[in-house]
Length: 424
Image (cartoon, rainbow, N blue to C red; front, side, top):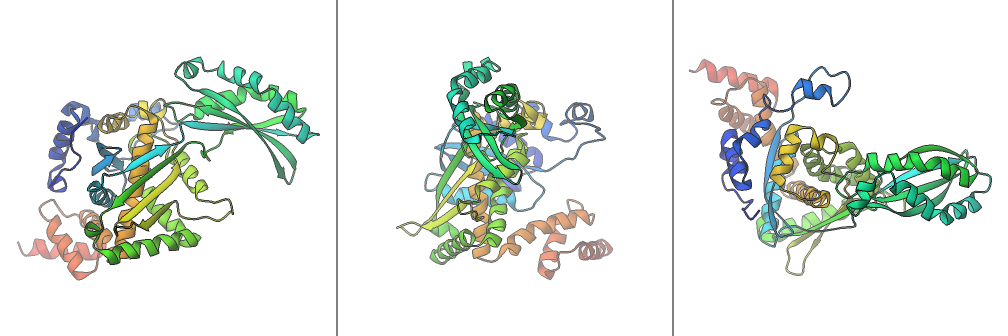
């Protein structure tokens, strides 16, 4: 790839100019990015084959986050979101990390799990051992269902068997642990679970009930770290304030919920842009935020380095894929993947987690400096002005007045617009 993700003046370019810049930087043709025009993207006919009872489509803005360096490679990151400031904040945070090498990531592998629930087992302790004794048989039966996955180096890695005490008795829960390679993996592991459930029921002497993956993808962890420059952040006081804010989120679940929402602003936008399952990813992230003590806490952590810079770290499950689902069907998702230029699902997951850390840093910096509203509302003012009917030539003047008056409301925007038009 080799082209820089640092694009000065990108935000001031027109939409067409931005597309041309992205195409040039990623070696793509203009036609490959034409799908980002709503008139050329997902049509109703295609949508009708994706879900049931289709009556239309809903467009969501797709922006490009710039300045990202992940494991030494520059990336332009498509982000689909309706919330102002998200793309800008992620890009700005990536710029602050860029001078110290950008983001560095690691992972635990593309491993998903399916659960088979066995109920009405009279001897659960003994049943657990009988199932473990049959591991080789169960693994072989499950792998036989997806020889292609095995051929590409994936497949069932083993079984876990847990005894879960519930109000209806002790349930025997079998986990199929599966390397799903470049798939998100839901279809693969669900198919395997369905197929081996009757044999597991026979071995246990009970009855199989639920047979489905778990979105608590704690064997598919991705970790990202970065050092954010103290001077670009605004100095030592800002660094200290962000460390204090991070400590607050680690200790208090009320703060942690909003802190993690800031992470998900970045993660969900990148997941959605690539056609992956936002609900599955969100479920995995929030479940991971609950520690062994049962307390919900922050997913990320910020610390001061010996040199006074800010160190940020984030670890979370990231179950995304490059094969199957909307990623291979939705024309915009396919174009987004081409812009990212990723070869594996793990590579995609690492970039997404880096974006989550960047977005989290952007939100924490705003909170630790001028407060979240100043930057957020200045961008929100553009949405309000456009909603009020401001044209492209009127937009900037309406936004300036909204901010100066500290009254960013649709009614006030309409008043300003009426005054501007009356003076012409």
